[in-house]
Image (cartoon, rainbow, N blue to C red; front, side, top):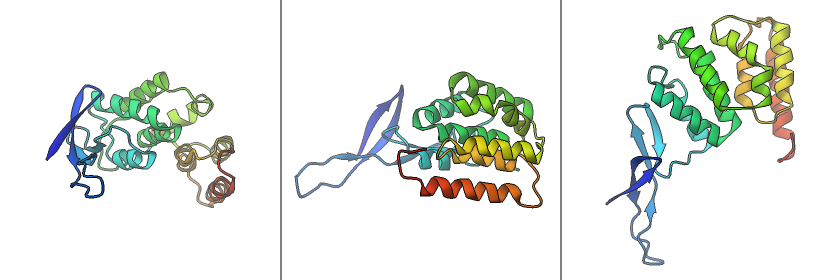
Length: 192
């Protein structure tokens, strides 16, 4: 049995669960349906967790479909800042199989800037733009950016962008990355 649920103007399939013998009701249970256009999974309830969203766009961001990338940005904005930084991460580091130009990625980034406000976005704008353009930043600049991100707990994707924005052959940024993530994981919840 398939029950449909309307979600922001679209209809997505929701599979009904088997009859629950304990209470005698047949309650619908959301499952995942593949959205062929966005090449990602959308949950029937239209609420994705941060992990689900990241998995849905990792190496599958719809660069060539403006309507879909706008939806991805809107969805990320409703989930968490880290989800939005994952969108920016995909712009900075597209998959090797993708042939999307830096100009297109910068255009998408400008759209993210218009729709999402965060202190890190304004502070790291030039680093993000440089990384999207395909250029490396100096090691000192990447380290300074990573230290700025450290003040915003659990922004792993912003930290990853800074980490991958330089060519660190000696591993200095790797040690800093590991120190910051260890600090975040050891901090009590609710505190930055």
